[in-house]
Amino acid sequence: MTAQQAEEAPGWSRTHLAGIRELLSRPLTSYYLVLGCSALLLALGLMMVLSASSIEALQKTGNPFYWFIKQSMSVAIGIPLMWICSRMPQRFFRLAGYPLMGISIIGLLMVIFIGEELLGAQRWIAIGPFSIQPSEPAKLGLALWGADLLARKARAGRIEWRHLLIPLMPGTAIIAILVMLGRDLGTTIVLMLIFLALLWVVGAPVRLFGGVLALLVLATVIMIMVEPYRMERLTGFLDVWEHAQGSGFQAAQGQIAMGSGGWFGLGLGSSRQKWDWVPHAESDFIFSILGEELGLMGTLVVVALFGLLGYAGLRIASRTTDPFIRLSAAASVAWIAGQAIVNIGAVIGVFPITGIPLPLVSYGGSALLPTLAALGMLLSFAKREPGAAEALAVRGPGPFARALSWLGLGGRPRR
Image (tube, rainbow, N blue to C red; front, top):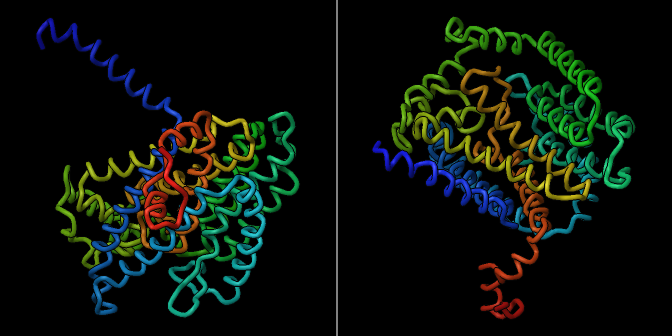
């Protein structure tokens, strides 16, 4: 580097940093970050589900597109659901948490008695050709219900942490116990992440955090000790390659897939590990197939998208004075970003395998629909940030509204 280039470099960096700060300070930044990251992850998820599931689907059903078609149907339902939620008022979400919690509790009780068991966990209720997992809408229900409970007790914008004791803590305990009775440790951890996020936003003292974490650790230890397969998973996690032909098989094959991808991957659809080597390649371990086909660069893009999505959610929470928006946005970020961290950590060997999907990317409509509803809620909240309404008015109607006006079904487009 020449002396002149060295002198110009700091000025160039300052200019670009100033440009980034100006971009992030715009009123609709949160809105476009949530929308853009969600769309990219959803599109990438559809491609990876098609690639990861095609071999097993061909072997079991004779149709390589079987699971891709089912996932596409879930996306076709989820996108309108997300759009509807993005246009709902805050009051709708405050009220929605109560029926969602009730439906989730009923569903979790049904799972205990008539649910299907798979790989040691009892999570699903079969309805014809479809399977429903009640613990997934329970995540959204807990986030909304808990946020509304605390927001109702807010005084002058502040919430007393003592209000956590009744009824939020017992309600969370009921949901968590029902999920644990279904032997679903991964979802229990995600529910606790939502609860801890509510604790954090409220400003609960450290001793309460410590107590909740101690109970969570105790419950985790008990669930591991009473289920032999979980102890085998833990043993396999502690020494994957020693147990590569047994309890560590899935983790070992997932790491082989990740390592085979190199910097830029083998190419979309070119995975070798999806040929009956990586179990549940389309769901729990789809990140390993993504790493094999798209390489380190592809995995970093996915991590960056989840990071931006988390940033946007926290930005929405920090730019509002409304306690419900602050609490529900933070809880939703803890759920989606936290679940992504747990899933990716399990694939790369940082955490034990818990069997939870990668949000927006893994196969599964039961997980996808509540996630898209939560993201639609974040879009609705983003439009209520300072200056967002004015920016939207200046922007004019979107393409959907313009299409309706062209068809004579909507109002006249604004100029």
